[in-house]
Each structure stands twice: as structure tokens, then as C-alpha cells.
Length: 84
Image (cartoon, rainbow, N blue to C red):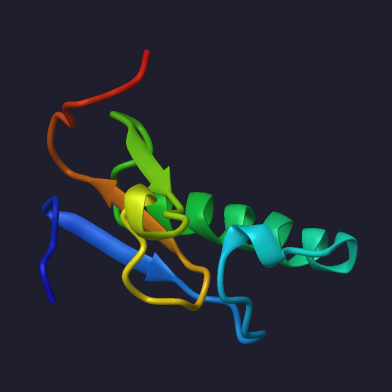
């Protein structure tokens, strides 16, 4: 709805988990699969070589507005505001 980069794709697990704070030990496999999916999509979209960002927001001050955990894949331009 409001893309933050030329490539902005969401990876959403089928299991409902409201925030990262609710991830249990048994959910770690889901997050490993999400990361694997994110890197596959980055390659498919042609952004892996130059670089991309994977983001998961948590709670209001972390920018979360949809309370179903998901990852944002951003790329296709120089991304600013990095932490290092």
C-alpha cells in the first residue's frame, strides 16, 4: 500500500503470531524459513547482488502497525538510515 523502495515485498507466515515478543521456541523454524524465503525472493527480484534489507517491526515505537508478524524485503535503490 505504501512501498518504501522500488522492491517492497512482504513475507507473512501462515501461523498467527502478533509480535516478535510472542515467538516461542517452536516458532524458530518458521523464522528460519522466512529468512530463507526472503533471500530467495531477493535473488528472484534481482536485488541480492547490490543489496537489500529485511525488516521486522515490533510494537508501536518499532513501527509495527499490523499485529501479525511479517518481514519486509526492501531493495532496488540505495537505502538510507542504516545502523552501521
